[in-house]
Image 1 (cartoon, helix red, strand yellow):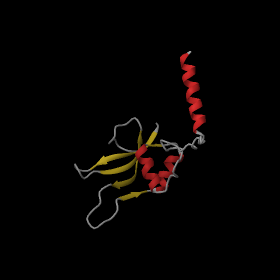
Image 2: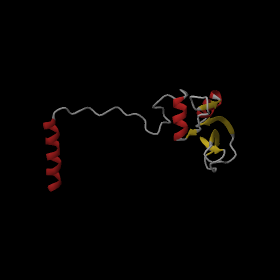
Image 3: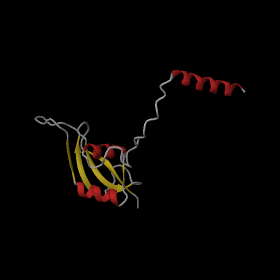
Image 4: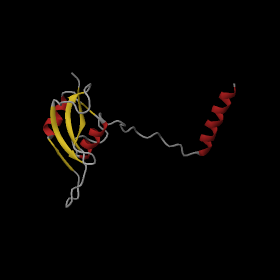
Length: 121
């Protein structure tokens, strides 16, 4: 049974709270989870200055170690909480080294002309 770490929506309209859960990846969004790992409240309550996230770091790391795949939104939250390092294997767009810069504009123009000449044949 492949497990996925993802967010399940709960709460009334305009007052949604998200539960970070470990769930069978083929199950529907609000299916019964294998385990509740945390709660994310994206709303700032009066008197507070930050959004709140409560989670069990040990259990999240356990599920990642046994092969659970986090969703894109969960990866973002885990990176913000320093549970995952930026550019981890779970990141949807892993950072690639930038290509070497071509500083000579004449070389760029020569390459474009070569491509155009190759297309004419």
